Amino acid sequence: MQNEKSVDEQIIEMYRNLVANKHPDLVSGWPILTGHNIKGGSYGDWTIIVFEHTGNPVMKSSSGIGEISSAIIGYDQITDGNKVSVRERIARHFRLSRRDAVFVFDRRGDIQEDLNAAMLQHEIEMGLCPMRIFLSHKGADKPMVREFKRTFEELGFDPWLDEDAMAAGVELERAILQGFKDSCAAVFFVTPNFQDEEYLSTEVNYAIQEKRNKGERFSIVTIVFSEGPNRGVVPDLLKQYVWKEPNSEVEAFREIIRAIPIKVGPVQWK
Image 1 (cartoon, rainbow, N blue to C red):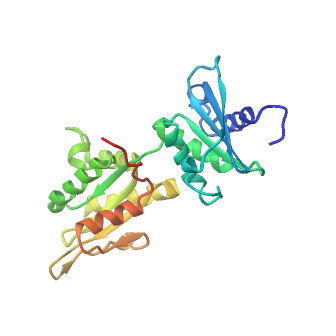
Image 2: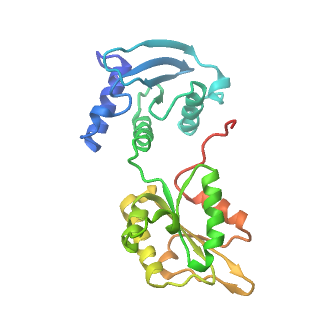
Image 3: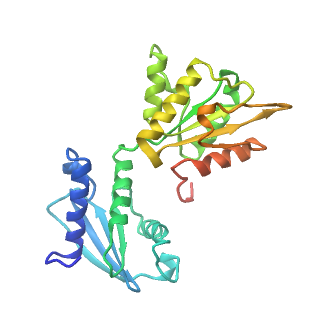
């Protein structure tokens, strides 16, 4: 990035172009583009720039943070393989919000991955990324699925369950379709009760459509349960996606967490 502009100005210009290409109507209210302060530092051969969103395009402050300690970085060396973790550690250390951004780059000046990470983080903050988890099940299994829902909520996830998500009088299929559009994953609880009935078949088709539309930002997860000698049967359309046969509900929850495209946040004091 050799230019007459400062490095942070070049980054902002590149980021503005990225946002404008994808969300042209939202640039005027986008995090860090509408005003920010800057912290600049280094770690070995790597440059670290922190953009703290202010929303004030007139005033901007810049401060140097020098050579950042290894205690903050968490590694002896920064590599392409640990950059994501390094950014997260820096964000925690400086108590940054989702409206801020961290860029970590070496002499190559390649910041495309950092730009994409900032974009995704800000899209999430702006409510542009569906992040609910659709829980598909047979009515007879609702008591079990409710327990999964409560556990998801305790961890900060936003599960979609028909009885809570559908307002009185809302047409069922329309509510289900909107539930999928608002979600980043569909979890199918396949017990011996689960059959490919009309609405279950519709949910399978909606899930496949969302997977095609969202790609890596949507996961289809099938969990197969057994009751005595009886085992749930995975619908043929779902066999091409991830499906697991856990030995317990705890193991089932662990498999779901591993498969969905969003993750639990850092541990904090209550």
